[in-house]
Length: 160
Image (cartoon, rainbow, N blue to C red; front, side, top):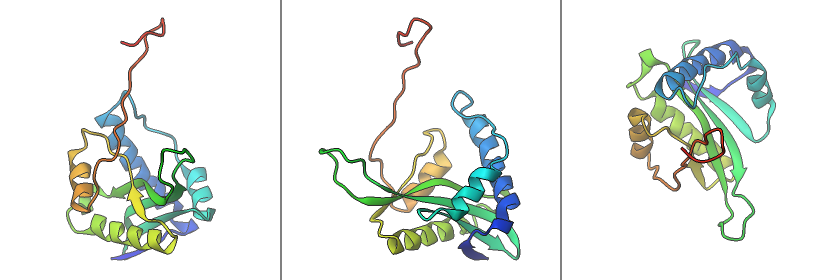
């Protein structure tokens, strides 16, 4: 297995992996996630971006995992320490390939890519109910830094 940057000819396989992830999230938290249409145009744009990268796990020509990375700088607010970081937008290992170190290989490659691009940390968001992902990230040194909370409004605009 090889970890490498994605290329345009990977687009169909990237869409398949992202579709697998979309179904998982929509089943896990349907009030927040939906199964989306093919993401081909988004993938093509990211493949050309200077501040983003898809890294893929290639097992003899079959893509069995991906990690989508984006470089950001902390919001320009006086209270926040300014730093450059990598945001992990998506990380997917094909269900049949989980538990074989592919996620760890992708994470190590993400760390290297981030360091080469001047980032000082990695960040991501995880649904609280996704224990497997939370445990994976924690095993790679991730800690909670913020928690997003939400209140649904009823028709009058009041919280539920």
